[in-house]
Each structure stands twice: as structure tokens, then as C-alpha cells.
Length: 98
Image 1 (cartoon, rainbow, N blue to C red):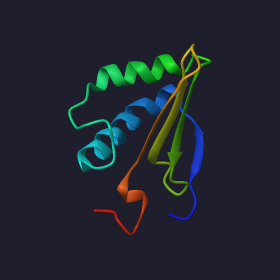
Image 2: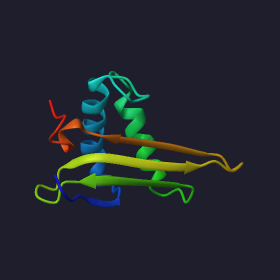
Image 3: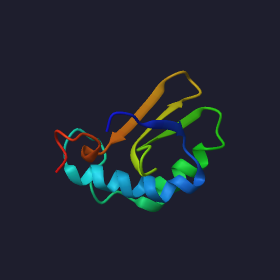
């Protein structure tokens, strides 16, 4: 995949983003989230962040299919510390897709 589309996450993206996170968590490497995470809670967290000016959530999509291959977010706490999160599916890289 040579090019991707990076855009703001929308409420309609949340179900697919949860599927993507589940896929990446199942890979078992390089991710703080493990398989079996609470999908409802994570989905609510993303939805609440969409209207929070201290949160920015993005999705990475394959331009050919529109299918999500990654997510990224930053949450700036009121006291100035930022929490960063991201996930990128192995299938986004032809060299290491399983």
C-alpha cells in the first residue's frame, strides 16, 4: 500500500476501528492493548472523545477500499500531559502481513 488517507475519526468509524483494534491486539506484539479488551468501553471512550476539544482521534484508510488499516489518538490532560495511542494492522505492510 503506497498511499493512505488520514482523516478525523467519525462516529460511524467506531465499529470498524474496534474490529481493527481487535485484529491488531490479536497479533500480540508492540501494543499495550491485549486481546479481550472491553469493546463497549473502548467504543464509548472514542465516541466521547469526538466532542472533546482535548482529544484528537484519527483513522488511516486504504484509499482503494476505504477499509481502515490504522488509528491514532492524542488526549491532552488538563494538567498538560499527553497520552498517545496508535494501532496499525500488519496487513497494511505487504512485507509482514500474515
